Picture 1 (cartoon, rainbow, N blue to C red):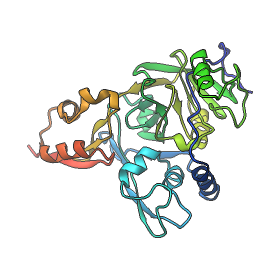
Picture 2 (cartoon, rainbow, N blue to C red):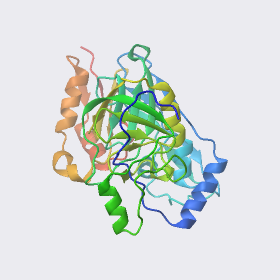
Picture 3 (cartoon, rainbow, N blue to C red):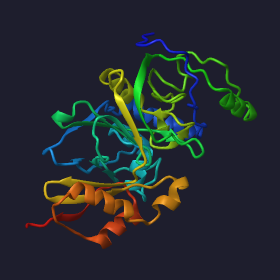
Length: 324
């Protein structure tokens, strides 16, 4: 086991998600055995002023495909692919069905330094060197209701390969009540919910880590920790240095720019944040002011409202630069 810094053992609020039906799990396990997995999705901004990367793509489903399997093979989480394909059956998309891959992203609001975790979007952005314009992004699993990951600025204070899990007493009591008692110390291996790699935050009890249940990525499944696909956390573990800044944000609506065009990307806000975000254009207006500065733009406000109402996670062009 490689430890880059000596710190007391983990007592994290990470928790194994409850088991799904055996047939679904077997189907997904088979699919992931035959699909190639993308360890890293990396983009480079075309212009320094751009804040939009990637492009929406499509694939044609095979008979044996499932939406979660297609999502993982293309660097997406469960919520993302379901929002982009609301009428497609999760477990039986069907031979020949066209699947939309929402691999087009408005970047979170600056600063674009280190790691930025946008909780409602269920996505992590890594900016290894801002001057290069490179962006690496991965889907994440987040805390379930009542265990939301705190919105805070922090840092990576420890990197650990094959971590032990020391479940807090509250989680052990919860599992015992469900008839699933947990030991005080879970060693590395297939039963460890932290997976093979963990990045510890300067925030007591919270980690960015892998998982032994990858189908939970893109869902609210943990007690507040951030989960990544095993291939994604392995890649990130190798790339991120100790001390790297981490910013955890709550930004369901994002405004971006590519060239002279403006885009709006809207995701479902967390249920507990309905009073703050429901149907409101206020945050969008503030973001537009920040991104446009003194430049003049024409905005289709009716279209912007429809994007917020739909909240499917796909960027939509809502305006353009007006020549002075």
